[in-house]
Length: 289
Image (cartoon, rainbow, N blue to C red; front, side, top):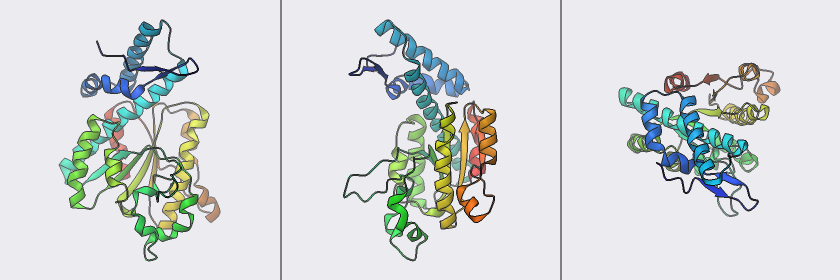
C-alpha cells in the first residue's frame, strides 16, 4: 500500500486540496511500469483517479470534489506527456546524434523589483545581453519586452547547437523522463538559447471547457508575432486528450492576428495531435524539427 499521508491538505475554508504531484511521485514506479507496458494515457489516468478517490474516501469518508480531482487529472496528464516526449527525444538523439530538447515551462509571473527577468518565461530562455545588442535581432523586441504578458507554453522544442551543452541536455532529459515534475532542463537552458535553436512551442489541452481552447491561442498569437519580427519560423502545436469538433475547426483554421494586420493568411496553429499513447507524439516531434 502506498503512503498516502501527504496526498491531501485541508484548507482554511474546510475544503481539501489534492496534492497531485505528491501522489504522482508516490506512484511513479507503477506509472513507469504501466507506460512501459504501453497502457493508454486514459487507462493510467483512470487508475490514478481511482487510487486517489479510494485514499480520500478512506481518510475523510467522502468523495473528493470533482473540480479538485479534474485539476489533478490535468496535471497528471501533463506529467505523463512530459515523460513520453522526453523518451521520444532521447531515442532520436541516440539514433541520429542530433541534440533535440523538449522541456516543460514554469508559469510566467511578475518579477520582484530589481530582478532583470521578463514576465514571460519564453523570453527568459534567451540571452539577456542580446536584447540590448543593437546588432542582434532580439533588440527589436527590447522596447516591448516589459509589456509582453503571456502564459508559458506547456513545452518548448529546441535543437541544441552547442556540443558542450548537448551532453548535459541529454543527461537532464533522462532525469526529466523519470521525474517529469523537474524543471532541470528549463533551469539549465534559461538565458542560453539562441533564437534559431527554438523550433516550436506546444500546448497540452486536457479540458473540454470552451475557455481552455482560447488561452493557448493567445500564447500562439504572441509567439507567432515575435517570430515574425525576429524572422523565425517558430511553430505552435496543440496536443489534445480529446478533440472536439469546435477544437478541430478553430485549431485548423484560426489566423494569426499579425496576419490580419499584414493581410496574409498566417496559420495560428501548425498542427493538432490527439494523443493516447507514446506513438501518437512521434509525428509532433517530426513536424517540429
